[in-house]
Image: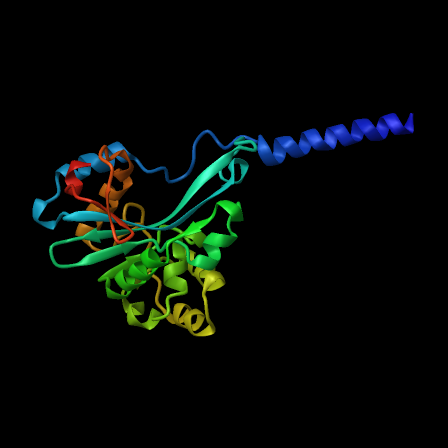
Length: 237
């Protein structure tokens, strides 16, 4: 009798664990969903002189992770991950969005045997961030911030790094040195108003809108030095 009860309890625990960890459902609606169609409509009204000239994709590595880790109810399948950053090129300036993952982080996430890292692409990304006119991060997950918070020359672009106060804790947590942590702690955060979450300038809004729709790009990117360049005007996305 006791053995049967223990067996049934074990089955119940396994079932509960499966539901909670692997098969629980995400909410039907999420806060702050990006209205892509509204953003694309807004792009059409922008002055073409202020639109970006091109969108650059920097891919420093790739790997896999369990599907349940990234999608509620995803089960035990594998999720293909890519560690990326974007460059938004204007006529006379560049904005960097996100900062991918460094080698240490890329090799530690998910399946280590499947992890790959491109040192040349990461070196190029570090250079682009250091020279950018503006640097912003969509959120502070490890695979989006490392080339910023572990940048060997953080001070070179610190005054051009923009982030809302809500990101400060995560940035401090992932910072690569005490000096960088102190610098991030001393920087003034920027307003994170709805509709302006990613950019600080008017033309920056155009770049964020276009980036939100870039995954619908129908042509494969051309590879060059570890960077994929989307050679279409952002208004066409």
